[in-house]
Length: 175
Image 1 (cartoon, rainbow, N blue to C red):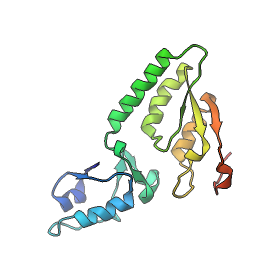
Image 2 (cartoon, rainbow, N blue to C red):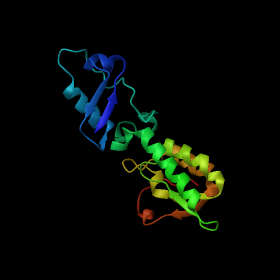
Image 3 (cartoon, rainbow, N blue to C red):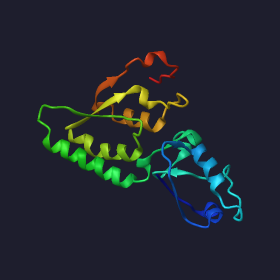
């Protein structure tokens, strides 16, 4: 399920400020197409070409534009951020002195998760595994700049790099 908060013209088009959509893992484009179908006929037009869509407070154009996927956990971003932070704190508290605990970047490696890691990486009890492929969009093979910046800024904490069979793709490597 996706929760949508509507403001401005979009709010007028639906005569409400919230919508629940019983879908998951859909792109922004698919969501816009669905909203156009769901919009009541007797309300103002919904201008999907002049609309700002933010996912977890991040403008979708800064992620992957209309190809950005919306996932279930996007609805409960604060809940998952707190759960992630609590998990990190617990792992740090129980980790052995000579054990490297590494967190790997994932498909949903959002700026919120990165902020939590920024907070705990300096403890030197938490480190990173960098999966190079996951720094690139699956849809366009374009570099996800915010992930790349995070890795560059925290390269001293990278303990492991994954490059499994990625050499066969058309990635633009930046080194």
